[in-house]
Image (cartoon, rainbow, N blue to C red):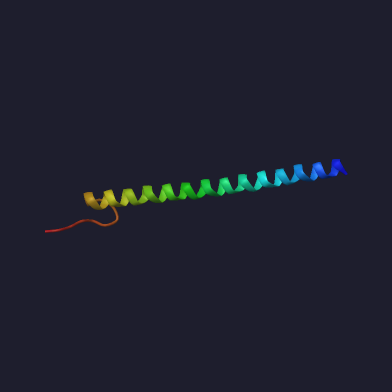
Amino acid sequence: MQISSSSQSSSAGVGQTDIQKKAQDVQAQQIEKILQSAQEQSKQMNAQKTGVGNNLNITG
């Protein structure tokens, strides 16, 4: 009885570790996407300021 209950608790601990690792992996991917998006937005803003890029700033 004690052996089976201890093995159950250890397997439950492994399951929680797997879930935590998966959650951390998902969070890391989300953070990476956010950083890439922020970098793209920064590039677009700089391109608009200098008049080079997607939107040419032609005036006058």
